[in-house]
Structure formats: C-alpha cells, structure tokens
Image (cartoon, rainbow, N blue to C red; front, side, top):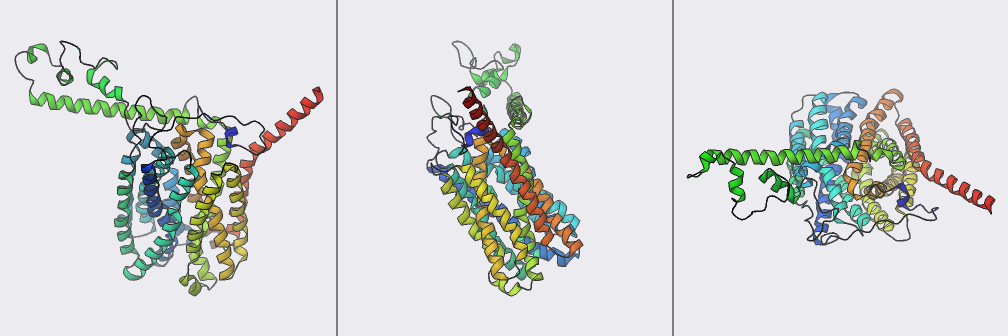
Length: 510
C-alpha cells in the first residue's frame, strides 16, 4: 500500500497515522550498510561532482567553437538533464537486472561518453557524445546509488543519505580543481580523455552494491533485489510445471535428467547427446532471463501506470511540480558563475578560491547538518525541507545584487548550505509513497529535476544574449522556484482549512 501524505507529520496534524513497523533485516543499519554509504559517496563525487564542475569546460568550449552562450550551455545542461530524466526508465533496469549490474553498465557508458567527447569536432557532436552518452551512463549509475542507501537504512536514513550525498560537494571541489589543472596542462580534449578513465571507478562502486540477502523464516520487504528471481521461479522453469513440483520424488529422475526431456526412444540405454544438453541449458537460461524481464517490466509498469499509480497521490503530484521548477535555480550558478566572475573583473580573487568551491564545501556541511537535524525525533523532515527551500530561493534573488567577491562568497555559502536539502529528498519521497515504491517514485522526481536542469542553463544563456546581463536570469528562475514552493504548500493549506472547518462544525453541534 502507498503511504499517504499524512505520514509526513505536519506540525498542525492532531492525529497522524501510525506507520507500520517492519521487522528489521539483520543487514539493515549494519556493517555493510556503511559500505553502501561509501559507494554512494564516490558515485556522487564522480557523477554529480564532475557535472557541477562543467563550468570550467563551458569556458573552454566557448573559446574553442565560438558559439553563442545559449547554444554552448546546452552541452552541460543535456548531460545534467539526461542524468536525471532517464530516472524512470532506469527503474526498469533496476527491476530487471538489479542495482549492481545497472550501476556497472552505467559506469562503462559514462566513461565511453567522456572519451568520445575528446574527439568532438563541434558543439553538436558534444550534444551526442557528452550530453546523451555520458548523461545516460551517469543516470544508470546514480539512481542505484540512491536506492541502495535507502534499502540498507531505516533508523538513520536521513543521516546516511546526507553523508552519501556530501560526495556532490567534495566532487565539485575536487573536480573543479582537477579539470582546471588538466585543461591548463594538457588541453580540454586530453582532460576529458583522462576524466573518462577516472569515471571507470563507477564500475567498482557498482560492484559494492550487494543486494540484501533473504531472511530465513520470512522475507523482509526490502530484502528482495528487483533483479533477483524468487527461489521458486527457477525451479518452476526447470520442471516446466508449478512451483513445488520440482522436488525429487521416489523413483523419478533428478532435475538434470528432467531438463533433458528427450523422447523415450533416445533416452533409453544411452546418455543424451552433449549437443542436446548444451542447447537445453541455453533454452533454460533464456527462459529464466525472459521470466526476469517480464517480472521486472510488470513491477515497473504497475508502479507507474497500475491501479495503485503513484500519480493518484495529490501530495506526490505537487512534489513533482516543485521538482520541475526548482532544480534549475541550483544548477545555473555552477554553469555561469565562472563567466560572471570574468564579467565582474574578479578573476584574480576567484582563482585563489573559486566561488563554486565555496558552494561545494558549504554544501557538504549543509547536507550533514540538515540530515542530522531531520533525524531528531522532535523535528519534522518536511519542515526542515521547506525552510531550506525558502533560504535557497532568497539567495537566488539576492545573488545578482552582489558585485564584489566578498558579497558573492557570502551568497554562495548560503546557496551551498541551503541546497543541502537534496539529502532529504529520498527521505521525503519515501514518506510519501513508501519504501517499496521508492525506486519508481524517486525516479520520477529526479526526472522532473532533470527537465528543470535541462532547460535552466540554456535559458539563462539565452537571456544573457538578449540583455547582456545575467541578472534577469536569476530573477526569473527565482520566481519559478517560488511557484514550485507554492505547490508544496497547497496540500498543507487544504488540510488546515479542512481541520478548522471540522472544528467549527463540531462546535456548532455542541
């Protein structure tokens, strides 16, 4: 069943619903759970960190290809956007193959996209090699990293997600320094080739994503990896009958002999030919794979379009609209700040300590602190989430008013700290729909974020090409962000009105 929006524990609720307590899995909140945090941490460094550092490469592409700022910004926005937009479709891969295989394949595709981009002849080639290929690989590695942390933690889930997503801050700081050094020493093409080799470490991170083992004597809702067949399915494929018939009975041939299933005249008096055994094993493997794909597709389809669709939850739909408007306001500073610094003649001060590095470092502390605060029993995760959003949108409005390095540094620090609410997004999503639908629901949310990231930076560059200023870009994106926050406040306001009206009716009866 879906978890309703009332489970988010609004402060004005008098009688929140009780959550169902699940029997804890022995590996949940255990030793290997922290390996999931470490794996997710490095995935955020290699994927989100490198994408937030693309402002360095954006300057190089402007000088190399001499295209407009709006067109060149599409390369970075395509990579960021596709990484998140493919989330719902990556959910199908997770349901079919599991998180480990999906992440490993994603690491290979991402590295291939970086390497091919080193040979791009123009911006349009970068759209395909970097925007689409590297973005697709990033999405295939990113979503499993988030989902696995959610599966391995219950008590300290917000803190665990906060620690893992601090990799975005560390990665932004490290990748900015690394890409800047590589571009100065070897040129941007060789820098992208080297970064492709570094991205192969995503395969190592994916190999650490071990699925939770089934619990003896009963299964836990989070113990079953989507890509893992249930124990009875393999036996049913072997026997060609219903589950339970696969056990050997007295006087009947064993499982290996039943796999043969050859005519009686061929099996009597002689062993079956080796060629037939190999062919039957191939057929059995294909039937198991087909069964796995069908089950994965059925789970994925029912999660999005079934009778218990995620879109029947009004609060979750409002959350999607918020994601559509919000993410671009966070992405735009990373892409355009290096050029804004050049326009303000602050390059010397920015070279000593880049503004994007300030956002990255404070972003680390913001995620850890907000995650720890949200885990306190007397604090509502939803309230922390909303306050951080308000702080971020105010910082976006104020940023164009600052024309000194010190002023920009203060605003960038506020942006970095308040954007730490990203560590709470999986927790809020799980409170909305439940742990069993986290992969599909979070895939939808990051897809909406991806659309916002896809359109935001080109939109800011397009406005600059018209007005020769970035000020209006931040004002417009801040207004859109406010619209997204209003969607989050619609449902709580409706509940407050209904509760007040119910109290008035009760008072009238008395």
